[in-house]
Image (tube, rainbow, N blue to C red; front, side, top):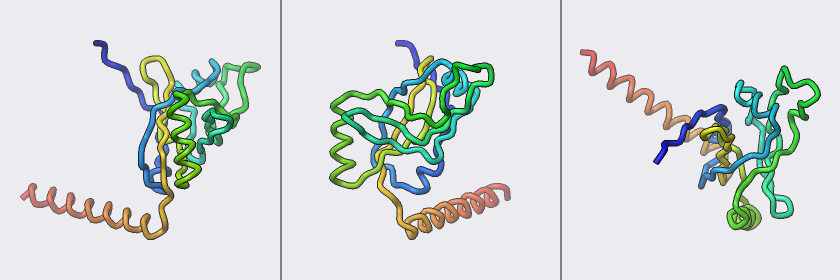
Length: 155
């Protein structure tokens, strides 16, 4: 069995800061050639993007893919809405969760799996301000513990 080749292009760090990720899914993404070339060069930004379900299809909105410098007339709008590829059953399940339980679909990362561009989307619930503070406090405490352990091992 051949091992898959993964290469991460972009990670949405703001998503994990602003949301609790309940579940994550791998989706394909419908792109044109110049967009793929631009993604290979790292010209993608997921910071303010989100996903929506319209007429039983999954779309990503707000994702910025920089125009490919040698693409001239073949370049598309950097902010255009792009279709995500997922099984119909999974999309309908997500639709139900988003409508009933007020979850949000947020792109977490974009990567190459072999020669194909894939996107990891997360089923997320929004964090309140006190949750964000709690996460920062935990991270700071862990950093202090690691620092103390490192100092202790040096002696």
